[in-house]
Length: 325
Image 1 (tube, rainbow, N blue to C red):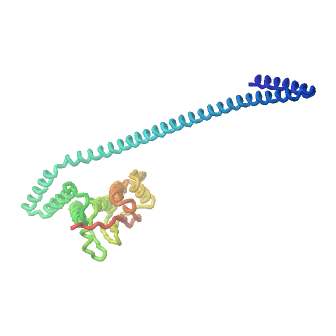
Image 2: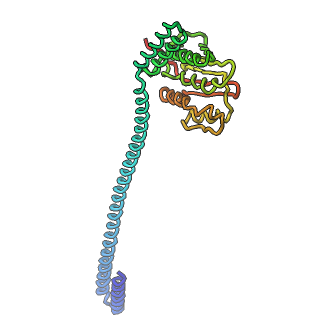
Image 3: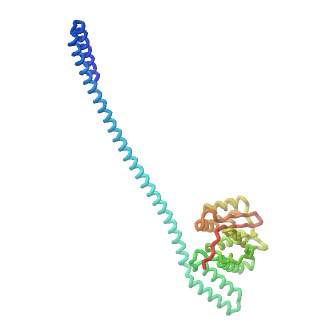
């Protein structure tokens, strides 16, 4: 390209000198012809240069289009791979979660299969009949309560029951515990404003019993003197509040904090000292809390309050559900 420019400049200079000579000699007509030829040659070279530049520009545009097309294809491939990886990850997580659920369910089924309900009820009925025959009312009543308790816990398939059903089960449970511990425990049920409709409200099955069992096992079993469990039921505007209180040994603030953490995330709260060994990791509270949140939403659930040496309150929030006629 540089060589072509030098030739062009050389011929231009030679023609320019020739034109000057002709003009000085008076050959103006021939000088004009040479000027025209010079302009024509310059135009040709300019046209050739412009054509080559334009062609190079078009090639660059094609290169850009190819690059853009390649980039678009590459981007689509990357997104497809990301979507595929995300799908595989979700399937992996879902598979692990399903496997854990199936494993847990299989364990539950295994435990349930070890208890033949009919065999259990028939045995308890035989014990009760023998106790009645021997005129031992305490054994007869205990066998009756135990049969009713297991029938409610094992046989009933309903996931939602009335508050009356749940309280009947609690009465049987307390009666069984009192046979074991010689009438140590007192149960009190308080309905705000004595609204009898409350008994027909629906709640998840086995909501109250695990908390009452927690109160007895962790708060009252090691306590001497009066041991009281109180169930207060407060209907509000659209919501139902149940408070299970005990006058047990309570717990320190640090223990209560760990219990609340365990209730929320299911992790063990720790057992660094003797008091933690008494209160355990709140797995029953965690299970009830999670069930309520899954059924009714995250704004509902359990709250726990406790004072060392005074007792513990467990507050349950859920919406009011009335039994359909």
